[in-house]
Image (tube, rainbow, N blue to C red):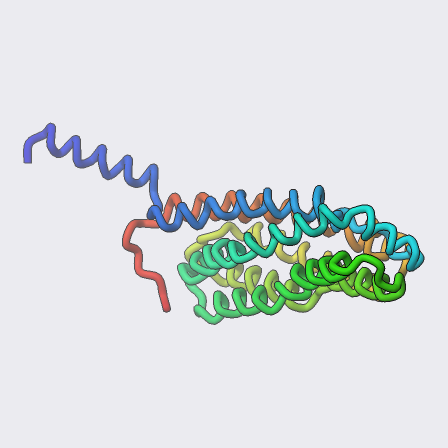
Length: 251
């Protein structure tokens, strides 16, 4: 091989390392930021679930809430039904990187299973309750209050599934000798577990910091969740970029 050809080959290899990652993995990665932008638009601007409305409203006030926001609730949660499946792509990318770790693939399977179970109480239940509430105008305010309570209690208070998700990911990171994700990410997951546990009192309190709209049960957890999502998106970017082409991944 001539010197020029060898230099070209080395440059191509270097460029491949810089770019890194397969096209399919990059497609999966781009789903994350796009989905979470849409998630924020739906839950914050349209459905009015974030920040959650007060839990101490009377049935008449709840009926007025649904009447005032019926159109945006319909639009927002109808859009959610279209895009919610993309969470499977995003979470699948995390599971893929977990299967690259020097741990049993059971961790990746448990991560996906916990999220699959958590999707109903943690996201879809609120959507279905709010959509049912605005589907037939003129329902009894006490029925609307029931749908309001179920939707928001499940949205903020769904604990066990997501606690398991974060615990499984934290353990996989701590046990991994390949350091696919840095160790500090495990401690971010631990903080997520803490916030999930601090949401347990929402089933008891109707006002104050431990209610479903409280500074501890909701706002602190939301801030830490935002930090977690930024971290996981950045770390997945680096993991996809640095993954060698054709690297075998355990089943």
